Length: 377
Ligand SMILES: Nc1ncnc2c1ncn2[C@@H]1O[C@H](COP(=O)(O)OP(=O)(O)OP(=O)(O)O)[C@@H](O)[C@H]1O
Image (cartoon, rainbow, N blue to C red; front, side, top):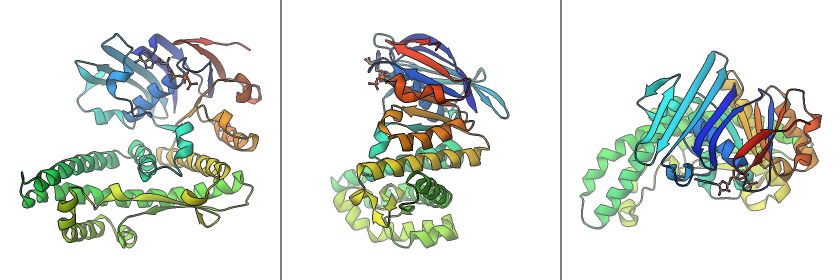
C-alpha cells in the first residue's frame, strides 16, 4: 500500500498543505523544529488513531485554531481508501472513510498500516516494559480488529477496576463489586495474551534472521514473550479458555493483596517482551551498538510480519534514525526500503540520506516552518 496524497489543515504547524507522494522513497530534510516529524505524526494518527508521541488531541491543532483536519488517499491492493479525520476542541473527532461518516473511531484502524521507527525506539530495549508492550499492541492492533477490540475492552476494565480498588480501600465500595470487571479483564486479557504469543512465534525467527544479517552472524537475538504469571505459556498454547482459567484463579488468590495495594496485579498489562543477545538479557547487558542492531532487527521483523499478514507492505516511517545508524546498519535498513515499501523519512542532513544511491522515482522535499517544497536535484 502507499499514501498517494496527504492533505493537512491546521495540523500542528501546518496551516494548509497538500502533498503528492512517491510510492517509493520520500525524503524530508530541514533544520530542527520545522515540521518534519509532524508529517509522519499525521500518518501515524491516520493509521492508529494515535500520535506516536502520545500527544493529546488539542496539541495537534495549530495554535490559535479550534479545528484541524488530516486527510489521505491510500492506494491499496484492493482499491483506494480515503481517510479523513477532523479533530475539534469542541466537536471532538469526526471520521470519514471514502466520504462516508463513521460512527466508531475504531473503524479508522486497518485502512492504513505503518511501521514507525524513531529515536525513542532506540530506548525500547532498556526502557520500562510498557514501551515493549506498546510495540506489540500497535503492531497487532493494525493487523487485527479483534485484537484492538480486546485491547480497548481490557484497558477500560483495567481502569475501572483500579478505580474501584481505590474506592474499596477507602471504604467507599464493596469487594464483590469487583466481579463485574473481572469478566472483561479475564476474557479480553486471555485473548490478548494468546494473540501476543502467536505473533511472537512468527516475529521471533524473522527478527533473529535480520539480526544475524546485520550483526554479521556474530550474535544471536532471541525474542520471546515474558508473561508475569508462570504457567501462562503452556496455557496459551492450548487457547484463550485455558489462559482465562489461570487468570481467574490468580485473581482469586491475590484479591486480598489487590485490595491492600489498590491496584490490579494480574493480567497482560504486567507482561513484558524478553530480548536476549548472545544469550544475555539485553536490558541489563546490551551496549548502545547492540541495542541499535536489535531494535533495527525488530523493526524489520515488524515490517515483514505486517507485510505477510496484510498481503501487501505497510508504509515505513523513519524519523531521524538514518543518521543515528552506522553505515552498515544504514545499508540494511535502506535495503528494506528499496524493496517496494513506501517510505517517508526525515533528516536534518541531506547528505546522510545517501539519496542519490536510491532507485529512481524517489522524491526529496525541503521542510521549513510548516511549508514543504519539492527539491529538484
Ligand atoms: N499545535 C501546534 N501549533 C503550532 N505549531 C506547533 C504545534 N505543535 C507543534 N508545533 C511546532 O512544530 C514544530 C516542531 O515540528 P517537528 O516536531 O515536526 O520538528 P522536526 O522538523 O521534526 O524537528 P527535529 O529535527 O528537531 O525533530 C515546532 O516549531 C513547534 O513549535
